[in-house]
Length: 432
Image (cartoon, rainbow, N blue to C red; front, top):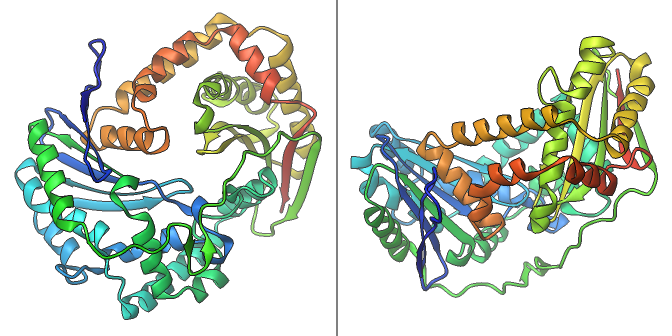
């Protein structure tokens, strides 16, 4: 099946092709002298049972430790010889691996990228060495005050959804993982039907698609797969439901002696990617409250009253459920005043209409960000891979600026009333 996703003249016009084996390929020619291949696997830490929490991220490290065809280190060596770059990232909902090459090297290097992702051999000795690297990464993240605060906020935000856990997993779990568990996890999840391969750059679309399709045909193994319901006896497909909104203020306090200033985080449970149409108003509200010096919270609490040294707002969208997240740094004695001031601003969103000039400012920022976020092959392949993996559709990616433009004061007031209660939220104080 092939479709060119174009209705009106616009910035993006990728071609989408689905192969009989379930692999989705998205390709676009772009007049920039580079090609980016971005392989998105629809698996992150959210699918892990607690017993193997951290497996998806640990596997990301092990992907580069060789295959039957490529010795450990050979992939990076050949990439670097050509002046290409490679990297990877794991989140709650996806893992992705990418290379950026010169167009003339794409046909040679893309199959190597596909081979390491599809056929990681996960040797025992490399597994033990890399385990130490991952454990050190966990310790470093524990040493980071910002990460500690974020983790405590997520544990407050979610009672049972896996988004409450760190992507890296706990040290104890990582210390106990076995190479065979990882091989099973890889064989189970790194299947063509879970992968979106995005190639964007200065080669004809059909050439990009053919190179990727051929790479996967050669790389696909024919060995039998483990059961898709369990890995080492642990269920991997328990259905998960979004958590109910807070019904009261849930308060947590911590002492962190490494801090110079106190931290405050306020969180509300809001819709995720599965209810994408309900997230747009919250994106605009996050901008009105906390993006830029003229936003409401920055202007009031930092610029005018000097109650905080910094404050930020984001509408963080995961697949199943999102979090509306407000964080600030302030003196300990200002914590209660700042919390109260933020709650008053939230209350005002529900009772006073937002001015057209405020909404126009956010619309302009979104439109500009969309244009700036489309300038390179890697920008575009990231955009396409993210939406295709998590939503199964590219149209919302292209329509995002237009949908934001269409949000009016009534929509925003409704979103605030529905999801942002000034009397029910999670709040974390971290005091020095």
